[in-house]
Image 1 (cartoon, rainbow, N blue to C red):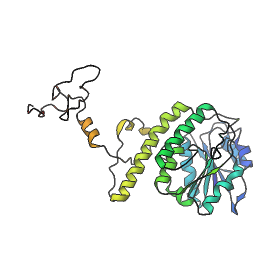
Image 2: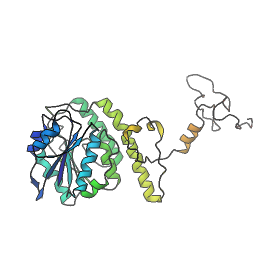
Image 3: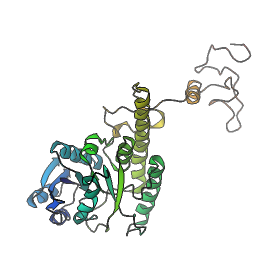
Image 4: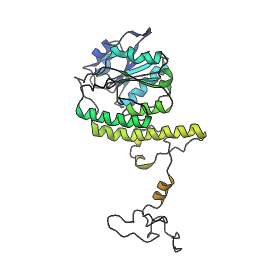
Length: 316
């Protein structure tokens, strides 16, 4: 089986973490891979010296890109299970067998090590605990699963799940990977794990910037999952597009080949069609309607998309 560790500037911790990786789990030898995500402190060199295989990125691509590369390597080498954990010593490599067991037993396809499964929150900074609680509650609501740790950095995938997994943005993987696999019907499970706060290096997670990058990706993943479900039912492929405020604004976070599904509701289409006009035939007002005490413009509005159209009173 394969255990890979995404790493960016983790020279102070990487050798110690690799020394704790078990040589085998449940009779399967463990191959250890470090995905060196553009480190400038010699992380890759130290990992190679410790006996790990190393995949180098010349520049920092992001945690999501590193996980995507690690999963692809696991599929390519035919691993019985593909596991990954952070390289900062927050998670215990010795607990790998606990996470792998449900996959090897055929009981689950996707296993997440939960720091909160026992109900005793680990030592964690307040802003990170808050962010974890909010995002976990959101993913729980979207999936309908009683998951307790939506941001865990310790996970195991079956070969089929690893081959099917799609991480749609480079910045992170935590929420979108779960939504993707659960939406595709893979069986989810959690096991309790230990956790200790990092004592070396720096975390890339800053709450507000993190949320600004992650929330649009989760919304895009939700649309893609809904679109895939509709395709499975109707057999008709969706029109690839991305709607709303996420369109273009966050397009750098998604691969060019990824098709964003979804559709625009009739009410929203009407709203966008009459944007900038006066009151519509249904009596509701557009941008020129009753807002901030302004009088609505007569139908049709002067200029705009409705010039020359016939209004509700028959005048054009």
